[in-house]
Image (cartoon, rainbow, N blue to C red):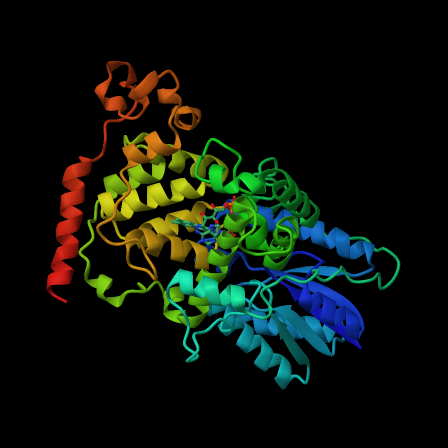
Length: 469
Ligand SMILES: Cc1cc2nc3c(=O)[nH]c(=O)nc-3n(C[C@H](O)[C@H](O)[C@H](O)COP(=O)(O)OP(=O)(O)OC[C@H]3O[C@@H](n4cnc5c(N)ncnc54)[C@H](O)[C@@H]3O)c2cc1C
């Protein structure tokens, strides 16, 4: 039987269960739907769109070598996906359409519509799962309910019979002689395919090289280096995980092997990295269990009563990296110029917006999505609601990272800040932490707010909703 495989955020040929299953049943054609309208509605960043286009080219070439065609089609919004997939399946005379499930609400609704339309047309539909290593809904408390706190989730996750990663699925065997690969457009809307090409190498081969390099050379020091933005201490695999040029299972399998076949109680660096991959699982499981998070709602409903500040000037200065707080600005400028921000800085910048400026976390969540190369609803929403204290297992409302103390701790020489903020490139010694106190830094803005006053105002706003609980 001939089959159609619908590729989405799984742009790889190895460890791809939908592709693997379809190839086992017969010959295969693949399809990718370029949905620029929907991507814009979902705030997908130009960096990420460009990475997707380049990743499509890579997987298209890999498939072509196996004699498998990847059709690249334009789709105008999720509501048109069902018709396109059915038409495509009929054109290639596929008996069944295979795809790997996505977790966010709109994507699930679209997939349900596609499945219903296929069934109505007498075409089979098989949905697989591997955006996370363990399927959402499979890590539950003994009473069957889901976890909302990370530590017990992680404990249960580690005890799950499928937690230990097995060897990832191989690429499919060739189904015929090599063919000519279809190519993604050079331009989608106003996004050029080569945007960020030097920073973010695309495709499965690049992802595997990045994974191998990290696991063998840097992962064992991850626990000591991961918080220092100047160091290449983290894997930078998040863009690959977001577009699916590597799977969570492949990451876990590589780390597990390097960690003498344990997921915990092994090397401190590898243990810590595996734990971060479990955070990714946690937020995806949370998103699946609480669809209202996909609709912009706060996890903790009482926090909807917080009276956020509305201040366009503060928001614009935060976005531009001109708040006058060097570590915050360095993080925002790293985001604006590369599409990526170090995790420590994501925590510092998000807390500064949601706590000190007390601007609604949704503004920051949206800005991150519109600018991150690794933008991912589950991790981004989880991270923002963690920082804003509105989320599951969030930082307590009274805890606010002080951006000056954070800089002293995690960028003690100021070298990272200097690398991102040219106005401070010549700033000497400790003046890098409080540049407004030194005449030589007058090209750099003064702080947008007084940290102590802002802290008091935020605590008062939280007290008001707690008193009225
Ligand atoms: C406000 C905020 C927003 C964020 N937005 C995103 C986002 O849109 N997309 C995204 O992938 N991550 C997001 N994160 C999580 C984290 O910052 C990034 O995953 C990490 O910086 C990516 O770099 P890396 O691949 O080098 O990570 P590594 O440190 O090498 O970690 C390996 C992988 O583990 C996962 N991971 C690590 N930390 C977290 C975490 N805290 N939550 C969930 N998964 C994690 C990621 O998939 C990451 O690639 C956000 C965090 C915060 C605080």
